[in-house]
Image (cartoon, rainbow over all chains, first blue to last red; front, side):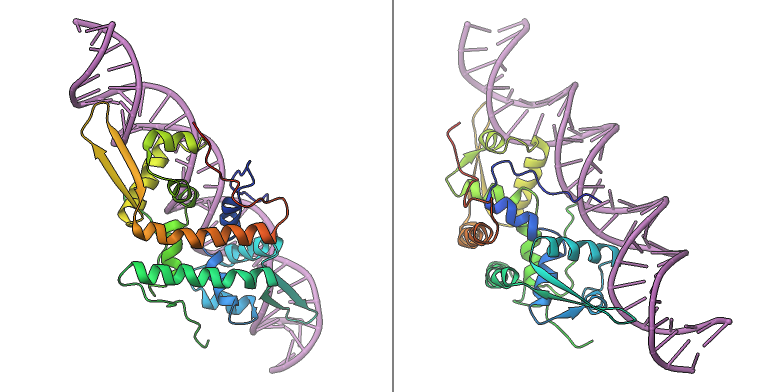
Amino acid sequence: MARKVIDNPNHCSLVHAMNIIGGKWKPIIIYILANGNLRFGKLLIFIPTISKKVLTEQLRELEEDGIINRERFAETPPRVEYSLTEVGEALLPILRQLSEWTAASFEDVEFEACKIVDV
Amino acid sequence: MARKVIDNPNHCSLVHAMNIIGGKWKPIIIYILANGNLRFGKLLIFIPTISKKVLTEQLRELEEDGIINRERFAETPPRVEYSLTEVGEALLPILRQLSEWTAASFEDVEFEACKIVDV
DNA sequence: TGCCATGGTTACGTTTTTGTAACCACAAAT
DNA sequence: ATTTGTGGTTACAAAAACGTAACCATGGCA
């Protein structure tokens, strides 16, 4: 299935950035992976409202863009672990600032409420 | 028309941020308004691929979220000027970092190619 | 009197994104 | 021999976003 991105004739870096992290789920995936490697199944549990299909799609695109690594182990049942690349890690301080900006600018928003819990 | 936002039961600040700036056009609108107040018609020219309808929608939502101001002058034909609020201005350094991150991480992306030209 | 420009709105249709549910391959355990 | 668990894929349907073209109100101007 061909991937759709925003038309970006000027190669604008902001448009490019939004193509990479601008999906409904991608910032959340990145932020969750910031806490360490995670298997596909765990990601599904951490993001309870995402569907298998969409999670797969988002992970593939993030991998294609060099934001995350995908490591498949030769086991059965299969085990696959996702982790941030260096490029992906470099995004974290910016996402954190975005969170801080929201928390500071809007009431009823707590900083970092997307917290990781044990599953 | 009811506005659709991502379900955010935990009030996660990152999800909230993406609800506000995560659209296809919103970061671009914000970045363009960073250069000064602009009338509706000029915005349409600066973003040649957006439609009237969608621009109106995006501006209304940004206004509702306190990111931009809308000033209507009592003239005919009508004149309406859009500008960033303080909250919107606070977003600019973050968007700039996002641009820099993209430019540094990906080839064929120039920093700040979304430049303002005279119209 | 009629026409113009601005900043919209509306109805409608198309495209894109997201969701649902069923299915599959593999090997290990029962 | 059958079941189990993981990490998917596939066909299909629903929802959301986006685009197009027509329309409108206002007052100034010819």
